[in-house]
Image 1 (cartoon, rainbow, N blue to C red):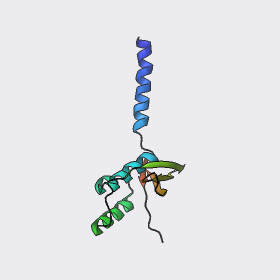
Image 2: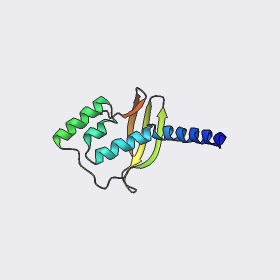
Image 3: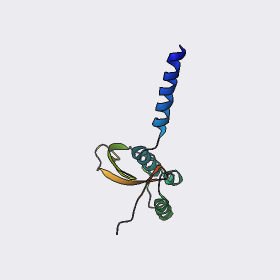
Image 4: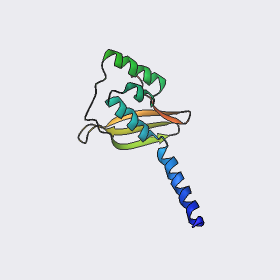
Length: 116
């Protein structure tokens, strides 16, 4: 019995740790779901500092609508070194959207840049 319990505990621990690890998909999901719910402070936890400032500014103008029907539908992700793009939809028949992420101190953060 002892020979069997150690591998089971090891496997359980491995899946628990890797299942909780942040990746571009989970970061995008948490960011977008909090943003859609109007939880700016929570969404900023998954964003770069400049993106957080943009969210604060938009919230101060009242331009961040709450979407009660929001649903994160993952399409695909593209990861290259410390940057990633996640493609998703907000509804099954909605358009695909792309969000950029960067890895900072080992954590994925949404990085929304202003277009020039």
